[in-house]
Amino acid sequence: MGAYIIAGVASLAFVAMVFYLSMKQISKGYSYKHSIDPLPDNENENSTEMGEIK
Image (cartoon, rainbow, N blue to C red):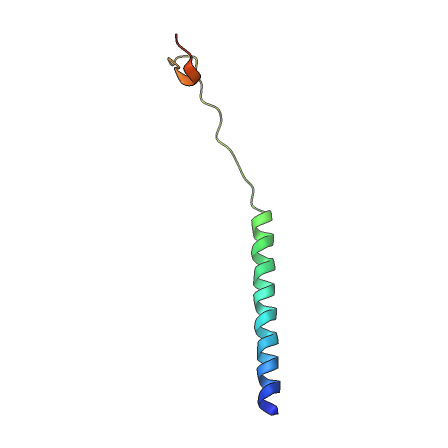
């Protein structure tokens, strides 16, 4: 009977640890600041994108 209690407590501790670490990683992901590159300057380039012919 004592082995079942020890196994139950160990299982609950493991589940609690996995839950805590999962919440920590999700929080870290939401706090990440995303950035984008600026648009390139196309004034001096010959652009042939989208079928445009100059």
